[in-house]
Every structure is written in C-alpha cells, then in structure tokens.
Image (tube, rainbow, N blue to C red; front, side, top):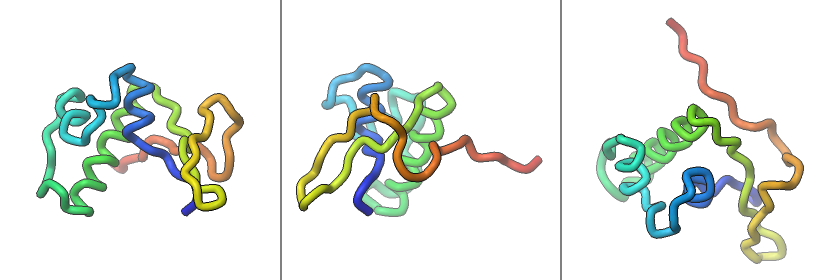
Length: 96
C-alpha cells in the first residue's frame, strides 16, 4: 500500500478539531460512540476506525487519500487535488 486515508487527519480537518483531539478513544467519544472490544487489539481498533469512517461519510465527509509513500518518504496528499485510483468509498448497503 503506497496510498491511504489517514482517518485521524481526515477527522481533524472535517470536524475542525486540533490534533490532540484525534486519538481513537476521543474521536469515538466526541461522536457519541463507545469503544467496542479490547483497546490496542488490531482487529478491534480497525473495526472502531471503520465505525468512525462510516459516521464521517454519513455526516457528509468526502474521504480521500491524504497520505502516501514516495521514495521512502511519507508525504501529505492535498485534498484539493483530483481523486486518484479507486472510486470514493460509498456508504454500505444493508439488506432488510
């Protein structure tokens, strides 16, 4: 993976909160959610990050790639640039 969405960065920009308000537990709390699972479990952290991403999409956030690796260096990708690669994530569709 050479490109990804840093949810902490997207969350901070979208909700206009400082970097110290973008820790996983704080983001969940600010969205009225509680942490599901065991803290620092890779699977549980991933599920909670996904819950945050879904909420951000519901709130109108346009999640885009915002970080990448180029020449071994971490680089920030402008959110103003054109979309690259895969289409933007869509809200999951649930069967009734």
